[in-house]
Amino acid sequence: MTTQYKQLTQRISGNLAQLHTTQAGVMKGFGDLGKAAMAGGALDPKTKELIALAVGVAARCDGCIGFHTRALARLGATTEEVHEALGVAIYMGGGPVAMYAANAVAAFNEFAAPAHA
Image 1: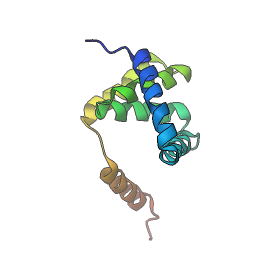
Image 2 (image 1 turned 180 degrees about the horizontal axis):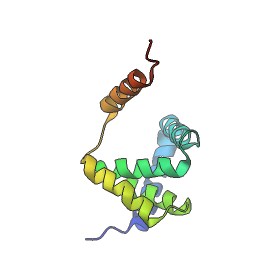
Image 3 (image 1 turned 90 degrees about the vertical axis):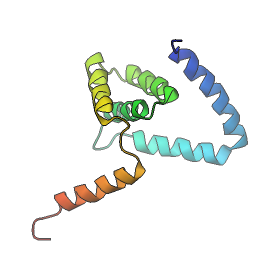
Image 4 (image 1 turned 90 degrees about the horizontal axis):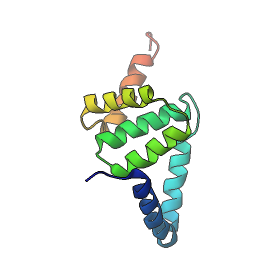
């Protein structure tokens, strides 16, 4: 069976609406986290969405695939950009999780520190 991602994201959005009512604080916090994480900074929003898509694919999350491909289309991502991000996801085969992200922060800090430190 082929997933219809437009329908899937509509259905998920409807179901999430119920949680926005019953779990308002949790859903607000999750929304705020998403806005903060996806805001432009050193990485632009399109790059962040490409990362999110790769992580969603690695985590085998159809909802993530739907929402992030939708965002990428709206942001003007090219097929080549999306395919390249998917290549990274395939390479990672499940990708890093929170513990490894924390280790990556520590590793970057170590390598980026001045040589005399």
